[in-house]
Image (cartoon, rainbow, N blue to C red; front, side, top):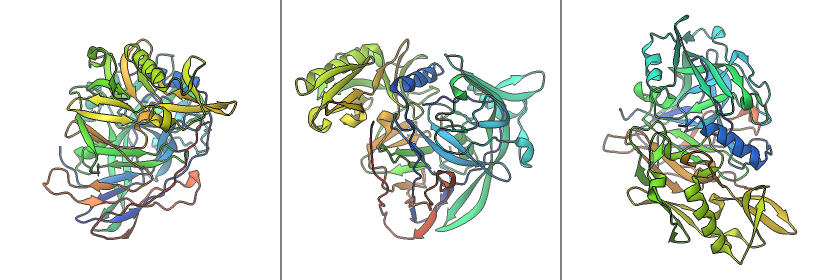
Amino acid sequence: MGPLFPAGILIAVVVFHATVVLSSFPATLHLERGVPASHKLKLSQLKERDRVRHSRMLQSSGGGVVDFPVQGTFDPFLVGLYYTRLQLGSPPRDFYVQIDTGSDVLWVSCSSCNGCPVSSGLHIPLNFFDPGSSPTASLISCSDQRCSLGLQSSDSVCAAQNNQCGYTFQYGDGSGTSGYYVSDLLHFDTILGGSVMKNSSAPIVFGCSTLQTGDLTKPDRAVDGIFGFGQQDMSVISQLASQGITPRVFSHCLKGDDSGGGILVLGEIVEPNIVYTPLVPSQPHYNLNLQSIYVNGQTLAIDPSVFATSSNQGTIIDSGTTLAYLTEAAYDPFISAITSTVSPSVSPYLSKGNQCYLTSSSINDVFPQVSLNFAGGTSMILIPQDYLIQQSSINGAALWCVGFQKIQGQEITILGDLVLKDKIFVYDIAGQRIGWANYDCSMSVNVSTAMNTGKSEYVNPGTLINNGSPENMPHKLIPVTMIPFLLHVLLLSCYLFL
């Protein structure tokens, strides 16, 4: 993830205003995504944050679809992360949490937190969860079966002296977080037969951070916590699926322009062009079997063993990482192929160790397509905007830098927001596969609410009511009309690199 948020020791009940869709026929709903205030960061800072994050990385079909509002943007010179708003506890309070497919646990800052930021450069209000003020909250003991599930995946630890289930995450640069687990209610609205049924809730376990150190204490891109979307038992999606509330699948479509936002649902986005590749089994993260890379249709000379999956090697999909990362054995041939393809149309340029290019032409006219080829014959096609970042201009020429970075000290490939943006991604945990398709994420999507029943029912999320203020981020869906087909709605679109 971008700014790293290790898991904390408190588990509190999460109350978020989202929408669960339980429907036997299509409903058209409107979504309007919030736009965050811009915030600029140096590329070197983003690389360092991602590096710190990487040091940590070593069913039933369900009954509905939960939709989350999305804020933030990929743009590393504006925000460099995507986040959503939840509501936790009784009465519910707002918490802004980063969307992170690279971790399992949902955690937020706790009222007794030491080192937690109190303000954010994202211009969002930060809150602290207080389990003592929520009558529905309860602590999780070490003897609780839910704590045992976390022990199996290293998402929880137990202190013998107080029998309290907690967690501690530490990063390579010394930053980290710890806390304890609590159980509380997750509040959401349901749509049943086209009608909004409010005040639904489900008990879940999440972490309350009592200590944050290092970069986690910095306010520049601070949020209230991390929303882990991993596939282990402690993740919210696994907890809700085990209760029969949602299917064990989620999807996102993250807008790549500077207005940001996107779509995040606990359900399967249905789109004809989605292609799937199997997940590597028995891995803690969303590992894929990357087999080769093409640049301009030519296969790069990379030993396939470079991409093999092991305990500290492989290819990971991670929405919490801003950029993308290749091993040295893959990075050097990648850069060489890009450079040779664009020469002599552009001028290579080194900027603080990053490979960049000066050009006065449209990058789509000059730079090649890149193809990441996965098991099962599935490919992910990257256009120049999926691997280049415009950093500045020099003498009237735009300076575009390669957003893929050489990862240091690890044989791992990480596909972060640079690659994930402007695509539908479906994480089918039940089916152990991941699918994707290029898509205009300002458009609405079709979401299946029936996973294994032999028939599909669809819901079309529409526009959320929004007054334009990040502090009043929209958090529920308003049904507009019932129709027998799926309507696409155009939203905000504007992208700018500095």
